[in-house]
Image (cartoon, rainbow, N blue to C red; front, side, top):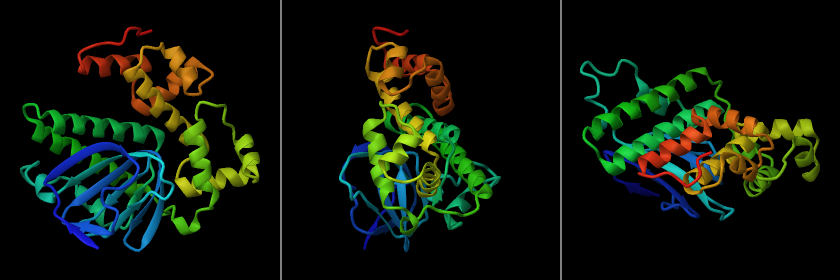
Length: 286
């Protein structure tokens, strides 16, 4: 077990195949971990959790934890670390809501809806941009964004029952299913076909998948497809209709509706906003 000195505030987003801290460790700060893509196991205290794309973890100060990527496939994550004093002067009279309580509730895993994941990802994107570019007033902006994130988590944990997707209650096939979706998201994926592939009934498949991951099958497939679509919109010149087909959507209308649910904006607006930040537009915008 190792101790690490926490940063006053630090955030980054990275794709990797192994954790930079493979041993059990703890630190004198608070951590928020968000899995953008992939599937891993996260050990927190004496409990183990299965994490798939969209999973959010809150880790208390001095809480022992460890990330394990047994499959060896690449995963992408956002790690946010801070000390409480970073937020101490955000409000003159103290915090109006005790958002720090989210770390001591014994609910490290947060199940987010598709809309909530979109909001959380936008907050992370904004924080990473402020932290990396450090424009005027960036630290005040970071404090405000962090408070918004913690408030969202507090409201969410106020409403949950405490059911957590532990590894010991997870069916062994779940990792195989998640891996298959991550590799075949562009194909037509149905509950009936997946249940048949893995030799279980459709109803049991739906129940097991949700219990294991915290998300319905459709939510998870859409989340993977939109994540891939965002990358294509940011880096390519293909039209939106072509991007929709490349990530597995048969209908441009359906793609646009799901994309807006996840990101809060249309695919075209997302592409324009991303490119305007970086000072240029891809060749084809339609």
